[in-house]
Length: 171
Image (tube, rainbow, N blue to C red; front, side, top):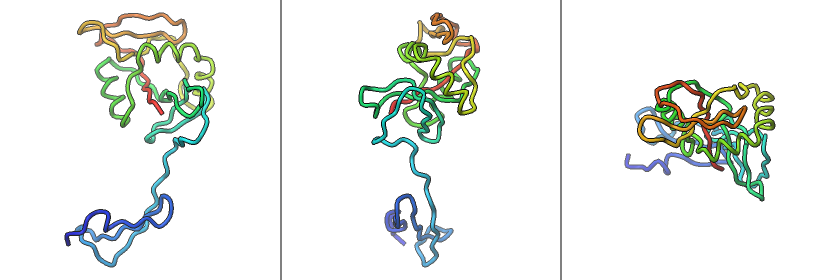
């Protein structure tokens, strides 16, 4: 009846809302209380490398933090084996700000691999494998850089090859 979404939703306490709407979208006296899960990232929390962190519903492990510990980067706990294009699509499907890591990200992960690898194990996800991990950095049109997290060796790999991928997100 011309009401905006804001007119149909009333916040009654943090993360709990009452929605005034019928099945046809009109506003009426029928109410439904819904609870929305709060975001896992808290900007007032101090994080360290190896901490579990969920962003946009994606579970990950912190692999880099600034001096304050409030900002840094998280690596997805889940990994996939796929070609480069599918890796890009998969990362983007995880939500806003999730991407394939840069080579710089991969080297930071390599430097903290023991802590991050143990954190992955502790939260029940696959540990690092002795194989290349895709970066978002391309070499010409048919190659992209990979980094083996075990030995730190960078390679140029044809994009159609299957390599491992994990996504990164800044917080």
